Length: 262
Image: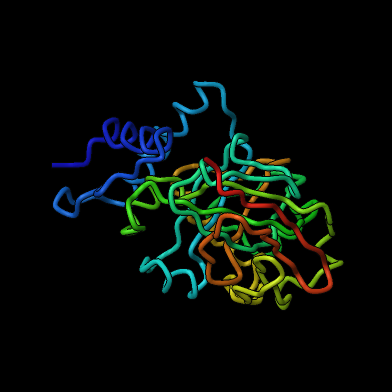
């Protein structure tokens, strides 16, 4: 039988609130589709907004081969970003807020005009972009031990946990996002490194891909929202008691202290 949209959304929300992951989210025998999984995500987000949250952006995930290999997902995921998921840079974030988090580095796009539709090109993304900022994304699955497939992570909003933005906005003309090296450090020790070229050749191309993909659901990316194109490196498992920093060469960095919690 088809997956139960309402029941699956309820289990995700319960896992989010209790920090107690589910063993299995979506079963293969239910013959799920990508559209089913995305409907679950939309129901989760609808309930969160009804409870007082708001949509602040959108993300693309697992576009880099390094990320697909790390989590065994063979196609990209995508999902909404909520205002409650944004954390200030340089301030502590508690391990109590997550289940089994990893951290990624990516260039975040802020749009000055709406963009979307089935024929979006890199030109449209460039024209729609106001500025980009360095960003760390915390990913955190509501499925135990990250035993996920594409349906699980799509239903679970692309496994988003949190977003931390750096304070160095740049115009696209001021950076070279087709070739910018980046690293993540834990207490100044490099734990992951990559290049923005790993994001579908360029993050600009990745966002054009995203627009074309979500056009199937009549979704566009609104002006003023923050859009994440995916990580430029393999995500690093977060270690409590460390200062986590993401740094783009020649551009800037973003940091926070990851505390052990209670």
